[in-house]
Length: 486
Image (tube, rainbow, N blue to C red; front, side):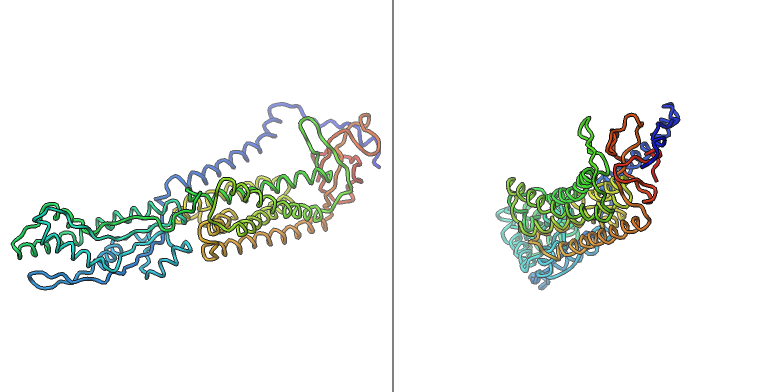
């Protein structure tokens, strides 16, 4: 036991003046301002103008048009409308924003099925034949009846399962196709129809001429609409947020409660402070206990989240896949969060907040697709657990758990986080213990007259990180100001 004289009150020299207040508060002010500057930059910078950051948005172009022959007074003329439209798309495309892929129907379907394409431009086999029929109808019937011939059609499909902006992207392309075709072929087709009409002593009526100026109708439709009970394509992002918070926030709760139950910190409930004195565990033992509690909690939280999803009517996914993947996210994030706290102490709470939430949500790709985020956001998101959680959950909810739709990549990256957290956690805690910096419960110094017997104090319990030779037994009062423990 230490000498009783060592337990007498020590004058701290604190005056409570402005200079002391400023010196104590400066760090907190700087941290809060820095955190919210980063928060504002991430949330506003990634969502203010996504169109200006759009790049390489993948769209399939499928040209199945077989072409057709138009008989004119000066001889037959071959029409290939599909080729004309494709050429116009490729020539006028802004390649920094839209990445067109000219593929066959099977490749386009596969790309839509695994989320590789935002949408597809489909030109049917009879496209040119329909245009020929329109020209001939306008020349032979349109002038007499004044009825506009039925237009030919091409279809633009967008995948609402890939992104909430896919429909907007394809609507923009539809306008470009209409403009391009009108400029390239509208006047030529109208001229051909008038030649045919003059050869038969007819004229092309005003309504027919108007229809021939825009002979191809562009329909924008959803490919594989969202499942029943889901009208928001961002739903996987919100589900990902739940499981990431379960790992991150759950780790903070578990860490604080276990530290209190092991006597490293007081358990404060309102004005009460519960001080528990137990035989101290080593750093590694404590960290492993926290990992185990997180692993036990993960399936419970995953199951409860699935229960809520069932209650609100979500359908269209495999519950088992949702369950095991949610477990993976929670464990991976929780393991790493515990390791960070074990490595740097209370500062780990702020680091975890920045790492898993502040940097995670705006780079996830759920609210704004990756192709419309600033490049620095894409770089951050490539290793972010939130982005991986979004990709995996989107694949499970919208793409039949396709490994190619992002689930495979997410599993590998999240598994890497979990393994890295375990390895680093073991390495850091063992290194601290070999340096003699064992984590022990130490009672705060109080005046000798107020100290109760049995080695217990009326003060709160603090945590000491110091060589074992400099510490007393658990619950013993140690010389020195608790605020300056090594």
